[in-house]
Image 1: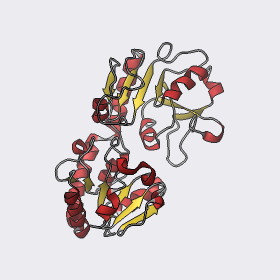
Image 2: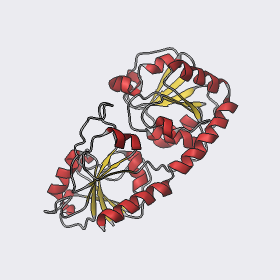
Image 3: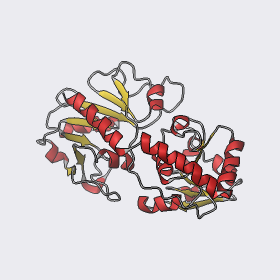
Image 4: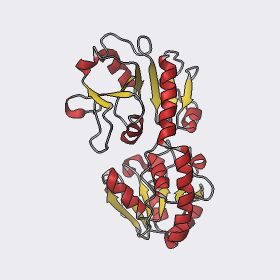
Length: 317
């Protein structure tokens, strides 16, 4: 099966291209958002194939998967007259939570019957108003990085991109508060733009392969996000064998099982958990093992690719 898919979210796409299908990845000059092509920082299989807009006009395409409204328009322009949802089956993949938690936000694909809308978490499916559009959820799949927990650094770790710009939604205000209880090493794009705070150490954006070892060197993973879809960094931290200290928001209470860390909306409880795990690497390792076992079961690559293969078979039948 040939699946037309734009390379938007690198980690999610890495899991998707390991399925049994051929993934056609648009590529344009400059590799802009209209067509980034194959990843350059991940190892992707040969079945992830770059294709230019010009080549798409005559290329066999069995299904189109869009993740942004503009991609549907690009597909209309590039598929040589074939209309997604009419001439080629259409799937809309939603990665994000709506802008507010009221449950009243209409999804751009609401009340459509020419596509299937797929959410990456049940929380997303609950919070978006999709009207009568056929909707389902397929949770993340993650390639297992292995149990790497070392805990040699007496610190917690957080991974947050652009925290200064994104603010309270990603818990930027909580980082200095929690870092006062135990050192927090912060990785991600733009972390150096945060105001200095005692115990908070912004260490920048590092390649994915290096980030796994950096995370595994710390003793707990801090997830301060108030409002976001479930981050792959949290799942990866669990697979690496770290205990999780997280706000009890969106999908997190369902994702982190008892014994795998501390999930709470009480900041004092989160601060106490950070202190405890950072002071006792043996307790941290024990909790991390529980989390790793749960993550292997829930977010395995095999389950993810099987779920997507079943859906793609259904929509193209």
